[in-house]
Amino acid sequence: RCRKALDGSVAQVCARCARTRVERGWWQGRTSQRVLVKFVRIFLPNAGSGCGPNDLERALVTVSGTECTPFESGRSVYILFCNATGQGVTIRNLHASELTICEVQAMGAYLEPEHPEHHHKRIRKGRGHHHRKVFSPHWPNPHRPHRRPILVRCSQSSSVPDSHCRLATDGSRKRCAKTAAERGAWWQAGLHHPRGIKSHRVGAVVLALEQTLSRRVLQSAKALKRLRVTVNNQPCRMHSTHHRGSGAEFECNKIGDLIRVSNGPDGSMAPLVLCEVLVLAWPIQ
Image (tube, rainbow, N blue to C red; front, side, top):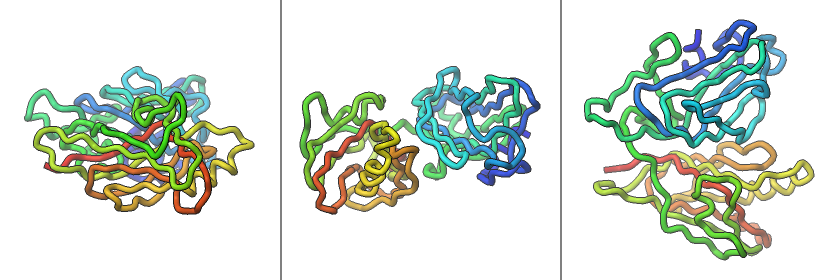
């Protein structure tokens, strides 16, 4: 059943996955209101499980028609960057083969509803109905609509030509904020306070770094180990790293409005390069 990809289990075994026949099949999850989807995480069956491909090389992932791009992958788990608004996540098989999806998670925010009575929504999944969180566990109350927090008033320890701190919040990974090679290089930005909002609870911070070549994987791994993320000087914990050192996700669960990313106190002279900073947070009124 399609709902097996939304049961909250990330077990990558055939019995816990949604499966199609050998065809150009598809899987779709829909919401009853428009949402902003920044990232989609897809769990596929483990290699050798015997229930279909464990990669997305022959699949297309879209949010209401907008194609998502690969962000990181590893151990049959894929994260795709979408940054699109809509009411559905679709995984479409481009070749005639079995499509097996064990779990689908989306990270983003509900958009402001048109009517107050829409504060509680039923999430529609394929041909069935299922009450469950559509977004990452970093969002403790996904049924409460709110706007995506906006990063403002950025600054960094130093700059190089053609680089500005705002390049880490422009929605593109092609342009990056970069400091000079220095000890303890840092970048920071504040969360915008709409009227009536006192602060934010920051669930996670996702960093996109420079795309790296295979020969630079070791250097990238060292750069990742240096990274430190804080919310109002409260440290976050690195939760996972992305393929070939292209980024990392930090779990925070802190209350505050100042996000700071820095190179750790190892004494090395190194630049800080941030192509995109995504903050998953919800407002406190």
